[in-house]
Amino acid sequence: MQAFAALETSGKHANDQAFCAVRDVSRHGIGMHTGQPPFVGQEVRLRLAIGEDIHTITTRATRVTKRKDDFFEVGLDWSECTPADLSFLRTFLTIQEDD
Image (cartoon, rainbow, N blue to C red; front, top):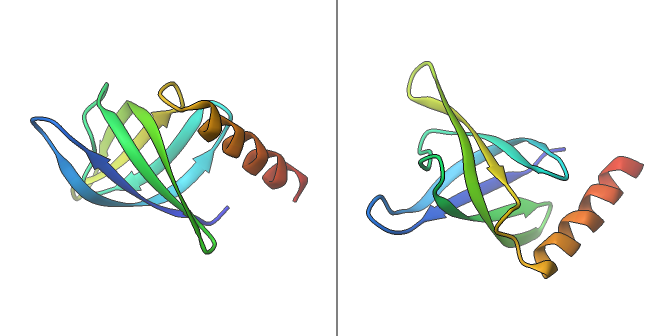
């Protein structure tokens, strides 16, 4: 899958636009690379660009691993998603599995 995303967080350590490259998506969450990671446990609004469509989904940061040169692997889970978000994700993942 080729997709890009932007992370947005609020509060004390707000970040209004962290660009990310999506590595993988599953029924449990999403993994990505970024230079501006959230903190573990932080609520994250994820703007996920798939083709020409952009979907905004609320997620939770569960993993942040620093790599070299201020590059981070980030894991977000779907625990904060609305029922509509989860429905979109189920449909999207079903399409990806069929390809």
